[in-house]
Image 1 (cartoon, rainbow, N blue to C red):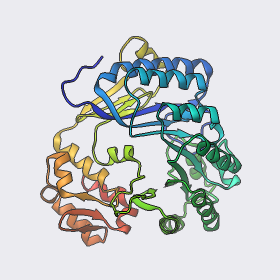
Image 2: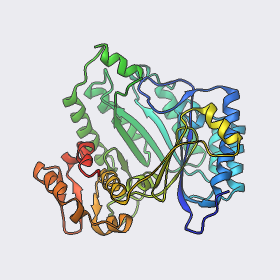
Image 3: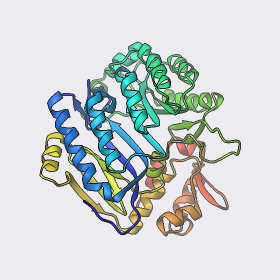
Image 4: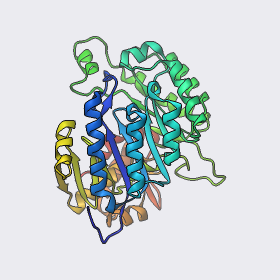
Length: 388
């Protein structure tokens, strides 16, 4: 077990690499489910929990995938009991990603009873043709049924995940999807433009000329997302993330924002467990093997399945932190950036900030630097300037 004299790490990511079916756009490490390998994975994951537990006191936990909700009741019970035994439950925010086709009341109640208090549901679209195009296994009806199931199990913090600029998606289809998704009354909305990544069926279709990418339509869809979500009571706090704010006092970050993701954007440390999971602990980045069998073999030998380790020099680490943090609408308050990195954004990156201001992509205030609405739309390009 790890023994540490410093403060324990407060964020934990767990990767569950199994899917009922691989979606046509997905480049994350995932594989079709198989009973034998899933059982082996659960035992290996329990061993990995045991190896890091002494250095963990989670305030945020996120189970992502793959499809975490694909694990059966018994497998979830094993994982949750282990976490309870090791003192890893009780996080202020504990998210599990779910596919609408794999949500059951028993499973939802079990998760809730151990302290899971936030669900992120991968809806992607409410149009049957587009769901087929993406290779999703759920129907639109399953979305509404699963949402009701989660509410019945006691979940009052649910995120809905949507995609836009899907091949064949018109503006009217997108508007209809937003109308229905917002009407569900979820606490959080995430929405991403389709990305065409190598080694995915969607990328192969694009290269084969089966469809074209319409960048102007994608920009218009993003604008529609921002305006519709605001009208629906959501506050945008990051390029692709919108949450409700229940407190009476206004805030840069709504109180139902995903705190785990904010850990990433604000340069915080976190452990990453499971095949392919990345971790970032006290300036050292790690990545586990993207191979479930190899992951299991390593843990069965009593060691973590880490493929690579990289210790970032302080300036490089600060540059990455600056880049990630600019994804948030609030940008970087200078004092907060200095607390996190020990660097002054105004000194190290003044040229880059001025360049973005001249482009109309950045705004400098007395206490912070942030991207403008048009800068947020091209945040990846803006962020590259800050990398060292």
